[in-house]
Image (cartoon, rainbow, N blue to C red; front, side):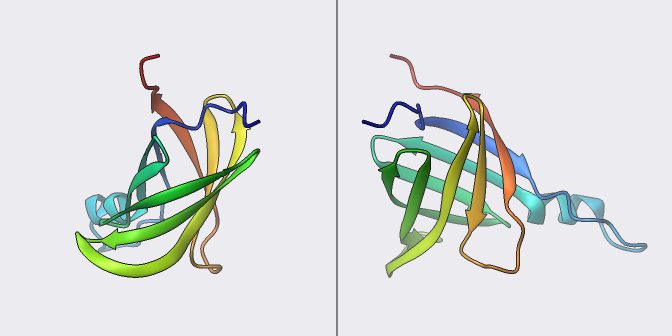
Length: 112
């Protein structure tokens, strides 16, 4: 049985470096990752793009599968995975292997 409490609101940022002449607000927005997990469904906002879908509980890891991207129905595709670090920290591995994982902190937990 999965004892980890995945449901809740999670947030983090990839903290992309800002080069001379770049807009730091754009870099922050592109690096931002917001994730809501509830009742087997998720909403993900990453790099300015909203996604939603379903997740499969797998003990210490979680698999995300997209069904909507930017409110458009998509063929089912793997969006990434999550790994628990501690009760209030998870690591998000996006669907692209060239991007490092990002740590997300729990912002809110659903009421019991």
